[in-house]
Length: 388
Image 1 (spheres, rainbow, N blue to C red):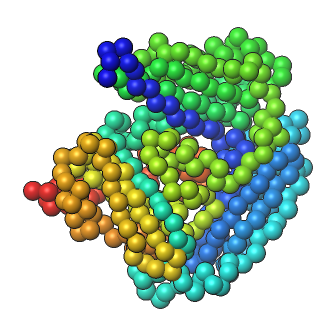
Image 2: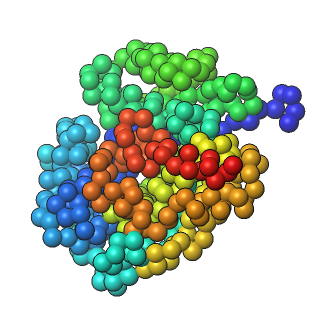
């Protein structure tokens, strides 16, 4: 690398009021409600949102009695879409429910009296990733991007962030050629009321959100700043851009620092390996990096519908490994059980201690605000013993 050459990497996040995230949260709130009454239910729920309209579709097989429309309206209310002038009001929007039962062809390959022998709910590939560049073993750009919109949304709800509306986006560029790492640029686009003071609004974002979050990470505050680059962001949420479940996959995971298998998490019960397999891959990667196997590690899992054992496990260490791939794969084989039933049992995904709705925004990984079972570092010592 040339002396003046810089390595810049950027990740983005969106708030709970972003139209796609509205749909993710509704789908996962429905999942939470169904599993609370029927832990054996099969759920694949998706939503589409536009101006004053919400479509709920997908397949749900359950003995529970859940009012999907009521759940959706409550989620939209919690987010803050409570006025007709926002173009999406929980009290007046039209909701169309198109839920039907899951195909028995799928169900017969998944169900088994022995949970450990349950087959994968679909074919697919999943990726898990961990890096030692942050305390949570997450890439720094996405971690900061999440916190920016999480803090901004919290300040909006408390009333401290005046004239802010629910729809927000953040983008963070990190300079990886610097030691220690530095923030190069922070961009935030925040929906606002039409009658606002632009100067005060932007000053609040820069001083109370951008600088505060960068200081929380012990990073520089002399970064380049961009706020609402078009100059105006009044029309937002589903009225400004249609929302769809599963359209913010990179925001949900690693901000582009690692690959993604392509399957959405939200609205799916854990028999769908798009969700449970991705959680397991993250758990494996995080424990392995924490045990000193590598500075960065990406794990790929693949499954066939109806089959419990993964078809393949692949690892990438990006030339940061302290051990050979053969040694690492041997550790994985001895420590981790990647069968869907085993994952569901280990993380108690059908009777979770958390709400799926709570992780439908601000990321499914590296969440210091939520105690997630796949974020635990409880296999580090087992791994270290095998490496001796």
